[in-house]
Image 1: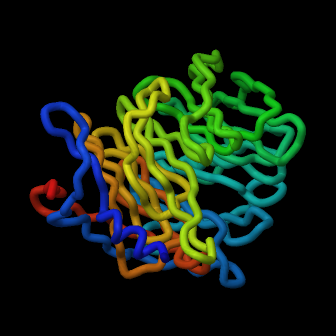
Image 2: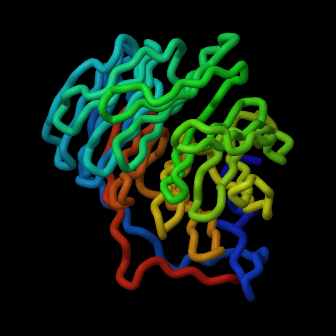
Length: 339
């Protein structure tokens, strides 16, 4: 069974509410966002490593393992080009204003302002794995380099270290929760940790899934929890198994299956969006209405991210070319029907 057959078998989602209770059902999407391709950006030697976009449609593309990054406008004009860090940006994300937050294999955490100047730099001791930011421009990150000890940390926007905590587990992801001013750390052994923005431990729990966690993403008053599952006789394609949890990691229900994704963005009031191997997945929140689904465009998707405000998406096409896509909402908004 290939990924298309898996998705078809599950419809495009489950889980609308009736009388305030989540119920199973299949979602019929009556219309969809209209993806408009704005510009293409070829990679170096035919490869794009990471890409992200801001609320003006400016895109940053990493095209070499050395950490070479270039920033372009949505129409393809070069804004700046530079090497970030000493070696290869492992994860990067832009805020709405165009500030870039990075962690590198050179064991660094770095913030590049929208104009290309550097405002945060710190050695983090190990390979950078995951990075996020808050509304004040502070940087959160974790390391993962298969060492005996890894670090989770926060850097203030004024380039001072707020806190650094060492742990013997391997962290895979950190995500800042805008609504509750806290950060979630997901570990490879299935543990999930919730800390205040000041670094104080709120709780540490093991996620209730047999395959362990890879992503724990704030979703309004809930958590979208995903873990990988290999499908098909060849076990060559990976999909994301989705679970809905409350903010204390108590599982509410399974949400089904979606194409594999590597980074997701919470858009307040609109849900969580992720660029996947099959297009763009969206996990919509409307009270307790959670709708997994996916949007196919005319492009083949690899890695990518949505802008903070949700208007633009940066994507890499089969890892060889980056592109900027405008998501135009149809008149009357997105409409769904439970069938």
